[in-house]
Image 1 (tube, rainbow, N blue to C red):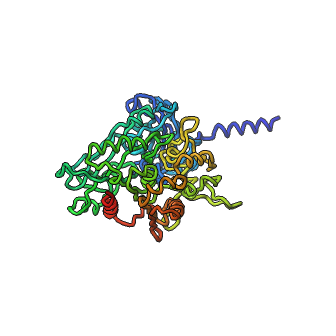
Image 2: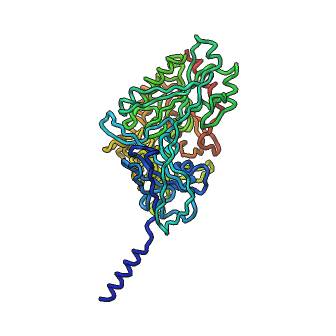
Length: 533
């Protein structure tokens, strides 16, 4: 009997001496936020002090380690715990973090309750006109940066207090050239059960004020949320905001010989992404209707735009590329053509590299029995894989549960996919395993979001209405493999008399490739509008 007792004593002694699991305890004082918060708490560990750790994390090119947990009605002074079971990126868990000195910061993404018209009540982040950037969204709380020695083997708690509040966005001021508008959308507010807003940045042509009776054609330039003027225009006084300034376009736009057109970019963030993709959807609501029935009529009433289809053209790249093509295809009589650059997948047989209708798994390439290769999500123009589908899916799981990461895959699911039983977007694939939900894939196609499939299905009606209106451009080594879907759309349109044009950057031209300058692009679009009377 003595031996079992000795073993039991040894086990108890070992348990007694073992250090507590490592964790972070995050709280906020009533002085920072007096009410309970429902949202998501993050802890970021970084090797550099600047920029702040919270600004180093949150993307696939993250320079920091990020861990996130949901909180439900977290009260002032009550700690939220980031522990060993908390999923992280790129490290899976705190126990996988190498021991060392880190700059550490916590942030909380504050959610709003939406009582939607479809009967669902959900919690998600209400954009504060920053474009769904949780680490810089006004009203979100964050802590001071602290220098911490973190050793998973030692355990213990690190306490962080969220004492700072992100201030409101200061939009650049209007100038002679650039005007900004923001309106409440009746359609979207009804759907979301909450005041929802649309905006636009309007770039006026030279002589606009001097010719008060003149009306102008319009270029709608699509893209991610930005308060910057279209095409990188900057007259310095208005401020460029985040984004590149196009000095050549700016100089030509102000010259006497440049086409007299108005250019517009939209602001239409949703609770799921910085952009609605300009279409109606089950999860986001009637953004397509809101843009065409509310925002564009508002712009045409308040600025001297020609209110005719011949005088409306579209352009955009990446997210904006998909939008520009979708708006033209879904509303063929409203617009006079699109110049679409490196669009998000326009054929879901190449959803990046995944065939969502036939593949069983988004993470692994089919057709391999043993050494099954991981599917890439991003590459360099030379072909070096930088992020996998599995890795990106893990990051999205860290940034938000229930499709609330405001990242790419879940943005697509919110736009293209059905509403799940809990009111949140039903995922196309499991973010932990990669298993594809075939019902979701079929829904995306059957509801017209696979633009290539939609065009094929409706070609008899679309043919005369799209002739000469489609112009697509993409690099042959697009960093996100977006060229693959463009090739499939081209294969079909080659069999028709659409007069569609396709141009590919070669060799090794990546995401963002453009065959001409912005100034040249504007001249091409202006010429087409001028030719149609």
